[in-house]
Image (cartoon, rainbow, N blue to C red; front, side, top):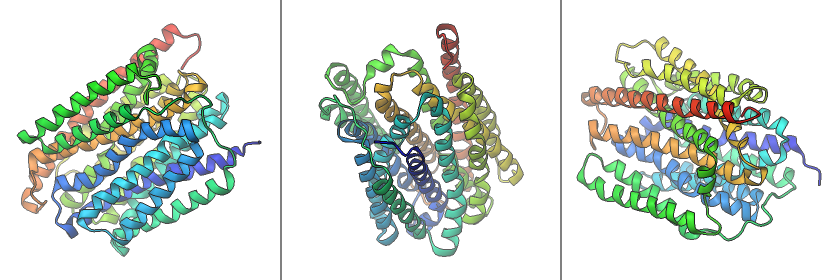
Length: 462
């Protein structure tokens, strides 16, 4: 059967736009949601973290299920669940169901993340791979850029619930595209059995660790963190001894380039994802802007990302993508350092310039890093490699939000954010950006080490 590559690309572009759009538009609306439900800073973090945690918990298991039973099928189920949960958030939200429905949205996203990129890679030739990845990554950043502005506009004029109803419309369009345009199914012929115990230990590990982080600095944090670490050890043991592991750790152990590039991706997302969440609070609480104005400012970074990403993707088909990604990590670190010293008197222009530099850094890193990762494995492993890339992204986003939540909890506790606590909020924001800067330096080392290894040991550049 002839594959309609354009239809596949358009479908993946729409889904790549939808999930980051949902997250970035939600973050800009969080102060309005917090005001309606009198949420403290930690509860605000959980409303965002529930989505990321659920996505990360189920991404690898659903990537494995997709390899076994069909990527298009899981893709369709994922976009359907995402659309239904978005409708529930728009129609029936309460302070109690907000986190629950966001978690359901996250499960749907995990099914999308674990399949869309694998489908795109499956239909692309090696020569087309970088360009297609660049377009897909650009769609992600268009979603990120449109989210704050459109989310702010909708929140200001129609209320924050309208954001989720827009998700419903886009989700329905993707469902129609899958049903009418994606005629083929993609699956592995000899996928083996599903690793239920490994999947369960991985998911419960993440849940325990994130719950423990939310309780810091209280002593109540130590037990769930300890349980999470035990489950981590159990997960590694299981994956090394089962016949069909949900995450083949042997790839990491036998392929150092693959490991280093994935570590760099994990660190990059850990150091950058919750920036929108933090700056949304900074701009609305400290600078007195409304949601729409704050969203407009936050567009600066993803707009640059959307412009530069296709160029970076094409460039990574011609020269070493690992080297391009390393440069991107350095540029990202350069952008984060000035954000660690923001204050009440910092100008908006200062923030915008930092965001534009950050956008260029992220664009230079993201699609070349993905191209480098995919270029280190055989085509038979593209499904698990795709899921791993998505997992690194989601784990990084989750850890980023977890770091923010931990520092907010230390500085603010469970108190609602009121003007008297704005100095503590600012201290949390500054401290978090400093942590992110340090992480980015570490990520630069990992990415550069991978690029050096490729240059020294490979005939061709990756």
